[in-house]
Length: 244
Image 1 (tube, helix red, strand yellow):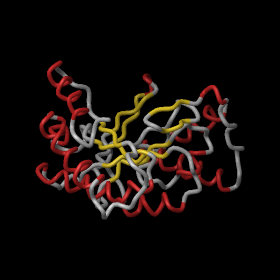
Image 2: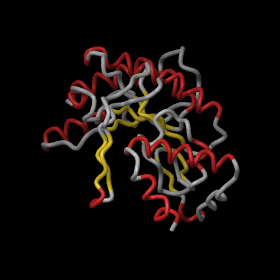
Image 3: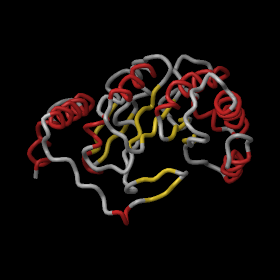
Image 4: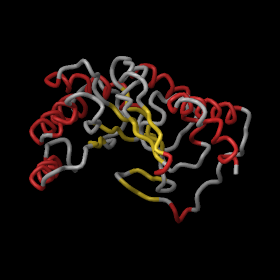
C-alpha cells in the first residue's frame, strides 16, 4: 500500500535520483525508529555457509549501497546478510548520466553505473561507525583508469583495508560497465589475480591485521559462455590459498 502511494512521486524524478531519495528516506525513518525493525527470522531459517551463520537466506546484494552509507537502515529490513560496494581504491564518478533506466513492464531496471563510489576509505569509515553486527560482505573492484595488467594492485589495495571489517569479501570481475573488466575472467588471468591477492598479499602478509584464519574471499564472475570457460573457472578452486 505504501509503495502504491509513493510510486508516482518516485517515478516523477530521474531513476538514479529516486534511488538516492529512497535510501535517504529509509535512513531518516531508521533514525527516528520508524517503522519498527523486522522481527528476527525463525531459527529454522538459519543457514551455515562458508563457515558463516546466516540468520536467513535472503540477503541484500552489492550495488544498492555502494559506500556503506546506509548499513544500519538496511539492516532494519531483516536481511540475512548485507553486501556493500562495489568499492574501488580511489573515488570515481562512474559512467556519465543517465545510467540507470527503468523497465516498468518488467518491474526492473537497467544498471550502467560503472562502479561509482566514494573510495575504499570512505566505505571503511562507514563500516566502523555502523552498529550492525550481522553478516557483512564487502564487494571490491578496480578503478576504471587502472590498466588490466595492474588490476591486482587495485584488488589488493582494497582487500588490505576491508578484510578486517568484512564477514566475507567478493572480488568483482563481472561488471559489464567497466571497460575490459571481464577479460579478467579468463582462467589464467583470474588464477593469477587470486594467487597475488589471496596467497601472497593476505594469508602470508604480516601487514594485514589478524582477523582469524580464512575469512571467505569469493569471486564474482559473469555467466560463462562456453563449457571450457566454465571448466577453467572451476579449476580456480585448486589455486593454492584459494580453494578449501
